[in-house]
Length: 90
Image (cartoon, rainbow, N blue to C red):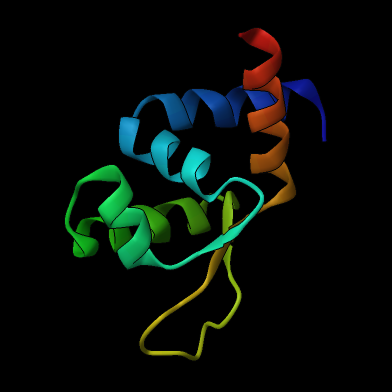
């Protein structure tokens, strides 16, 4: 992936503090929506909408799509590159 792709996605993430917070909280791990919601301090249904939006933009993936409860999410390679880019900027 190139720097333009990273910067475009970074701009998209920075337009919403929730999106950026979700990506940062997931990090290199695997998280469930209820844990993300608790950490960020918003309701789970809002986090579910944010995760769907991030998934649509190829920033997170759901590891168990068929599950109706306790879906597992992780960052894509693009998200991990964005997190590295942010660390370098600090």
